[in-house]
Length: 219
Image 1 (cartoon, rainbow, N blue to C red):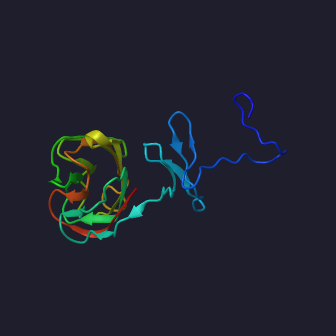
Image 2 (image 1 turned 90 degrees about the horizontal axis):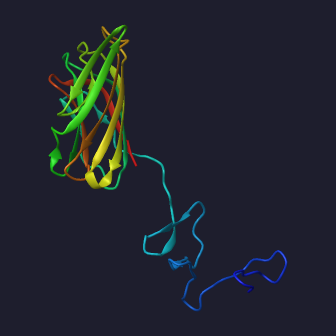
Image 3 (image 1 turned 90 degrees about the vertical axis):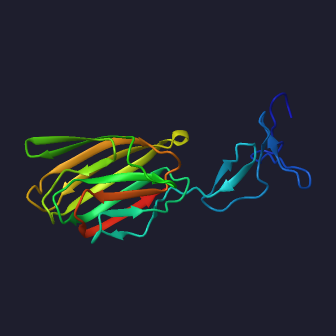
């Protein structure tokens, strides 16, 4: 030990610091307590915000809910999403409905799906024509299209402010078949929930879904 330096006396050797008995190494002004054993391969050191460090498994992969068929009904709901998620991806694959109406997305918590407080804007582009749609009661996913026309939609939801339960929304819809198969609908917006998000629902205004599948992934 010399001044502010601790140096090994043997060339190219490590400096070993350890506690006595069951004691562990405590370093720094924050008295950070280091784990006394190695973790598993791929783990990282994390903190509990109270000075205790530990080896933890860090996962960035999405968890997929069981896909739901869109072959009947007006509402496709993933109603038991786990707590603590900050990102949701929803993919509507080859979905169609029986009538010519808009499709929309609702978010909800333990109190149910919420039908107000949305800040949403959607633009449908068909050749040289554009149609703008604003939503306050939901997120609009697609503009009206012919009955039985199929669409593919990619939706992304991100938790912006956990204390306010505020989520951002963005979506892209491409009509795969129908009288306006070249139409693209792009949307974005925000929604603050009353409590933590637990459910999301893809809906049609009227008629019923009659084809396709909806996938939901989250992390």
